[in-house]
Image 1 (tube, one colour):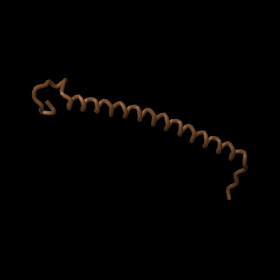
Image 2: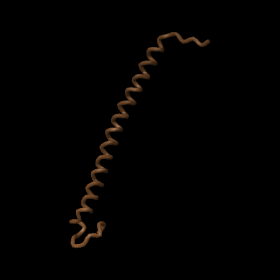
Image 3: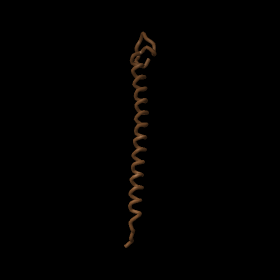
Image 4: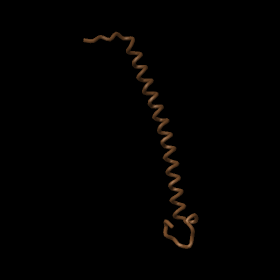
Length: 67
């Protein structure tokens, strides 16, 4: 047994079950965060690209001179 307890089996061990539950919780949380972060990053990139295109369109109408 991981807890080195006696008189019970692994599937009934409170320490083992707590570790398993925490491991699953952390894994689940990590996956949720990464999906949320990637959606947020994609939205930011789209906003940034839209801003770049809009500013380029505005400046294309003006005459550019090279001194």
